[in-house]
Length: 146
Image 1 (tube, rainbow, N blue to C red):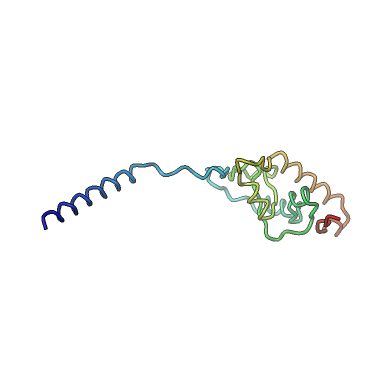
Image 2: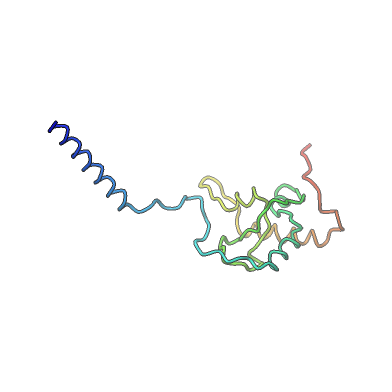
């Protein structure tokens, strides 16, 4: 009985030392793929949101620029190009489909990824195409390869 009591006390001591070590260890760093700013998000002003949605006609500039797909994307986000969620300057905002927003916000070590300059250029080209196009002309699906 005495032997078992000593084992239980020893096990309790080991567990308490292990718990103390875990408590003193700093939490793990954020995942490597995240580029999001730690700044507090400011709500994008409603007028700015409306302007971005209207200018883009809810088209994703990356779908258009990369895939020649100008269809409406009702499920999308207004993305912050510089990844600073507190920067609601209209030049820093772009409407992206869900897939391209996720792709833009993630970073993998083996691929180049999408750049800020690239996204801005595709956005500006899309805005120009929308302004110049006759009504209904910009709404087309990508052309399938031959």
